[in-house]
Image (cartoon, rainbow, N blue to C red; front, top):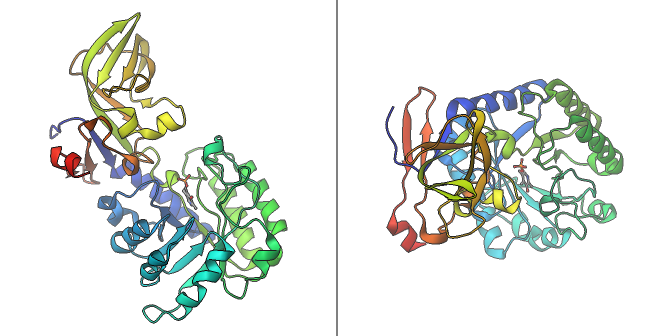
Length: 371
Ligand SMILES: *Cc1c(COP(=O)(O)O)cnc(C)c1O
């Protein structure tokens, strides 16, 4: 094995393939297409593999939409919480579907898109806020109080059905509970039946943990098939986390071990710039270690007091130079990395299906300076 300088993110294509096969299974079984949500994971160096199993990409901005179109191909869905005129001018040149967050944006840009000469047959959609959701965090709850995400008034949606051919509802976040998903799908089916009966496609968004081993995939497919048959609609899913879950590690080295009542091992990466969501959602990193009797706090090397990956009891003793691996480090990590403290940015490496490790990106002082 090549020795790579730490810190680095290591994406394992074999682990990725496992998720891809489950996604493909769903499409085969019930026709639901899956689009990769680029806001979670945009590492285009593995898109050749992913695009064999997924149907395209969905996005949160012009740049993500463009990246999906250039690097993933297949179907490109564009969404934005608010498009600028400049966004639409570019997006209408390549997107297959443009999904608006509000009726006012749809009405504003409708004439511009319909007079489009560059690309015909762009399908338009609107995001709907179903006012139900599943999320463990208010910060990530699209149906939270006063939410700006999606149209909430069904009558208004009905009034623009002549302009759209689909709707998108994103209302789940890390939902591994099929019964909860099914209950909400039934609720939505009743609430929007007059809308769904008149359109061609419905995207059910992301946030469904259907690639987990324990998820009842056949029941899930059954519910999606029924939904699709009942309304005669094409169903899309927009997995971010579910597409890449368990497929990467952040690999670090211990630089120092200090003691203040408890032992803290300081590694050569940091939570805020390299695994930011742990801080935002107040979670601990998952450590790739056997449990045991040795207690350590594992911390980052930024100057932030709370730069802590977690507190663990592990089997082995750590020493300076020990390699420490954090698992499940693919989603919402690399897309959020930043230069806080001017710390060395982890390289990005891919373990290909043939077992060979390829370093696809390294960062240095110039990158920091230019940022
Ligand atoms: C965030 C998001 C997704 C992906 O969510 P995951 O929880 O990563 O699956 C999909 N669609 C929309 C509209 C989103 O905002």
